Length: 360
Image 1: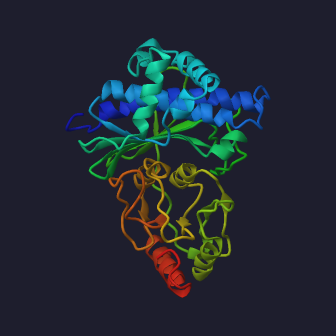
Image 2 (image 1 turned 120 degrees about the horizontal axis):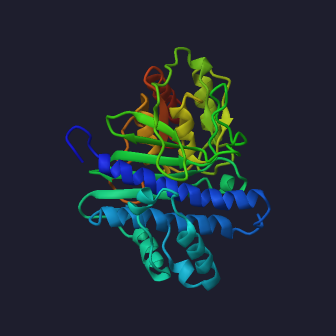
């Protein structure tokens, strides 16, 4: 890191790491789409999760040995299933970047035993130094299995705040009208990778097989003047939201366009917001005790904030990513441009108050 360009080394390693992991997941999803893997078998997404986590943590631990990790998986299931372990190892040991200097920086995993130990690092409590890499190897497992939108997610959190985020979106294809949809996928290429460092803007680039491509800076998101014209994004099949409250919030603003575009992956919603495909999102859980996992939001939130998005929980508080594996001090989510966020937050509070404090 330099004074002029903080986190430059971390960013360069994170980009290579996410790009390589994205290539791994694309191998699996392509095989699924071609029928080479049985879609009734749940193991493809399990293999992708384990293999991508191994590649990501290995590269980061090699370059930043004092840092900690917060992820979903440990290697217990692999130790108890030799066939599954072999399938994960085959992917890990054969996935590499085509450019030798680029491949040298993240490095290779030398053995199956090293792979298992590496995966286990993601299930630990994190680093006592306060620097933790938060990762979700495949965010959007259901849509991954359908060859729709999913994301390979990585963020650096320091002192409870996001400092860096990189999201690989191997199926992302932005339509001619700027739209992002589950069924609009990059079937000819490798999708897009988005990144941000706090205070330095957000960037998008094609995912490549070798060196990281030159990025394009994302412009500021459009402000919303008329609340009735909000373009919403939601996930109508999710059990972790309260659909009738979401609808009531939209109607209180005079909007009849909810639920808008249906996107399953939490992180892909942030990507759609950041590239201007959508305007706003709310997340009101049905149970006030529910707390979201940090890996569903870290990185994507930073990318959205770096293009002008405003994020808070339902009480208006910013998010604290330094309390472990969950967002323990935050309930729900309100995400929108600065021009509409105060009105949206006010509508959220009014609706919650009128519905006996659900989500409060």
